Picture 1 (cartoon, rainbow, N blue to C red):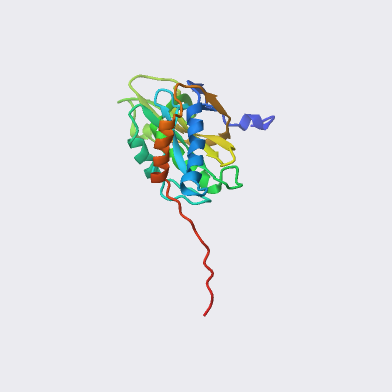
Picture 2: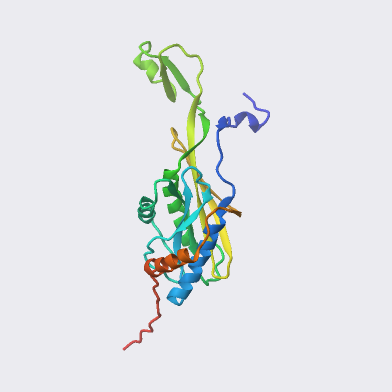
Length: 265
């Protein structure tokens, strides 16, 4: 058999029916943005130096795409050049939130560093946050067809053992079926990642995960995104700033490393 082109050999693209989408930009309340930079300012003021710190972005469960607040957990240790978090830290903080609140990402500071983008360590943290957050707000994105090249259709109680061995996939029904399409649910989720600096700069990304329920196929992706400010009734009051000073004193654990010159005896 001859083909005029390679088009005849291409595998058919699975049909996909989309139900919903994931955010393409980061919505953040002005209050939350101001609070993030206020924490940066207070770290410098309270601890007398610029240190990396991390927090979590918080949303309402009914509107997970909008960052309403910044949560400051107990940081393990804070140095001037890296921050590392793990799923246990995220889970512990989530458990302490009100029932209608949900972590939808993380934020951290690079302090006075000249590194105005995400580091390799940050990318590891991004994956850890994405894995955890997507278990909290798994969303049905689509139904996708599973293409079976050699589907065997059998009727319950009307087939032999030999017939059962045929085909790459066997579908047993209660009545005669000539043709069948199998559609699997595609779940998805996202997490936000924001990095800020003492000089007022910020960079942000959205990380995505899609997982097909039957095939188990998992896709992750990332895109750089804009911050879109949203006005809410919340405001950073002097009383809240005083509370934040106490949190920075308690939860930020500065560690200063010094180089020691070892001389041979």
